[in-house]
Image (cartoon, rainbow, N blue to C red):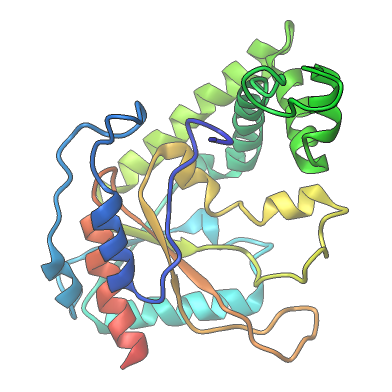
Length: 279
């Protein structure tokens, strides 16, 4: 079941860009049993996997993604990736996504509202616990959801409630459209946009569970693309050392974004860059 219907998108975790393309080829296209799947024809072209040059391609770097809060090690890895892109013939251009700063707020309002709506079907009649005390809504809501789900349901119910809908949900929906327009304008001057995937490397298991806000902020770079409905990929690049003093380098991801329904452009770009990193 979707957590947030307008945001959730199936993705894959693979060992290579080629594997990701093969799975994409199986998943892409219309599913008559899924009313949210696209009906438009989905182009497939495996020749994009043979790309080795980025000559003639303009690569957008959004200035709003390189601000305070980005770990020095992550920034160094991203800077090295940009140099690698230039060595492959790609032209780097600066783009602006001015409403990026509102992405986190917009996402956690819209997402929570949709979680609240989607989870409401767990009433013990069609979905949820059906054993024990009969079709007990209280039982489903108290034992059927973990603390994070409950937190999001409560937040979503609040922003959808009378007196708050216009102030929160409606306003967030309007800003979401501004974020989408930012990307539309940026793609007028570039073919691909690249950004860090996260402002830091992975943290230890359970390290930020007690502080949901810090945990949510890790999504700051990927959320705008989800709000705008863009296809994207995370490509592993040079690892970086955590800023907590740990001497073990951890993976850094480069986020690759393209216009809606331009997945082939992502595979073409990622294939060329992957080859440069693995040569």
